[in-house]
Length: 455
Image (cartoon, rainbow, N blue to C red; front, side):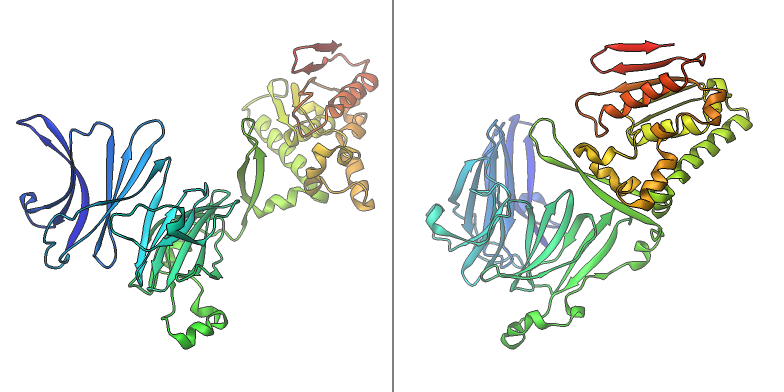
């Protein structure tokens, strides 16, 4: 068994560093290694090496660790074989170089050599070329067979079963796989994967099976595999009509995938905008499906759960009414305000950040329209009737708040909140008007440090 490895050797006698790429046969002494590339005292270089599947080509990646990460790709033709031994150190030709260049050899087939590269393609593309000894690659020397996708990063690509390319794309922190024809990059099939990542993979041009480890927010690491059909001209013409069982992914260790029961869980994807470059940053929310039991017309259940938890803490002596404080922001601000008007006797103080108080008009503000999936559309009569009962603004004055109300502070971010500032203005004004005779403190605080407080 043999391998090409990168090693760093240190000469104790001469105190001279060497960076070496060598052919080493496992179980033999390093003195028998065949040196492919050797740099003396290279303080700012890193090397990587790769041998083609056919064993005839050696690729050496040389990276200069400077600010521009200048990269060189060298290649040479090997004489001999890995089974016996390579005969001599190959002559290396300079193939391509560039600042910030990232290029990776994929495979060689029928005289064409395939690479994944970011040259003139920030999200990477796949090109093929025909190597000519001593000639550098330029724009006219390579052909794009899989173009750059402006929305997805082409993370890696491998040749499987000689005639196919399996390409892995990264989008919104999740991987997805596609099968392409090697000859010209034609897309053949898109595999269905849940939101998650591929952490390891194994397969090659000579293998019909491709194994990979996949994990998601809801499943542990498990090994899956894809079985690629054998190539024949007759079957190739009918490839797209293959039965699904010929293309679907299979579990290698399905028992592991079923260790955790996620049938009662679900995942949501949200995006927020980076404050520096405006790029969308994906955010994934994982929760039990019973979360739905606390939304829309069941929203009161959420308030009831928090009230029950507060009563439980007081009953067991962990705290008392006068020491218990409830605080929430936006959704949580709505929760805090609803608990305030429904059970003011449970809390010593309530702090609300950018709370959503007016559930009958919140949808009229653009920044709050996404809340419709949580509270329901007030324009629908059944939703309107439900929201009238639970809207904090419309339930300030009731038999509970007439008896007692704790100290209340509403903090308002006038610029960047998803709940319009008018929610807090109206809620505090309603508290002041309806409960002015109560001995309590109601305050409104702005993020620009201006404070308005009444007793």
